[in-house]
Length: 155
Image (cartoon, rainbow, N blue to C red; front, side, top):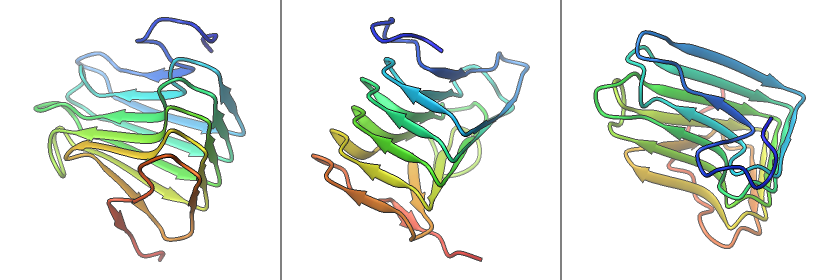
């Protein structure tokens, strides 16, 4: 875990596998607070993809994104699943930046039973990135960005 005031490329948890690697990270019952960024899933190097699960955790007070997922053209897909977690007091609660809507270079974050509250931007989307809801979240009191890109049906 990095302390507040660390450099702009650091975060509380950074998931960034090398060119031949892939990553699956499971973050449960954690508090990730007061970093430059809370959780970073960075697909800029790997062709094999990244998946991050965030369950029953609190992510707050991070200068940039609480959760930032980035897919890069020609690289593996970056996906994240969030359940029963709270993102508050961050620069952006949850951010997704993707170079494609699906497949290589995509970035998709799915959120259920969670709160995105009191961030500067609640939900941030760049290019083809997606932050999708299961329709059972609370998004409120953010200065901007309170709309998911889509709602998926609970099954």
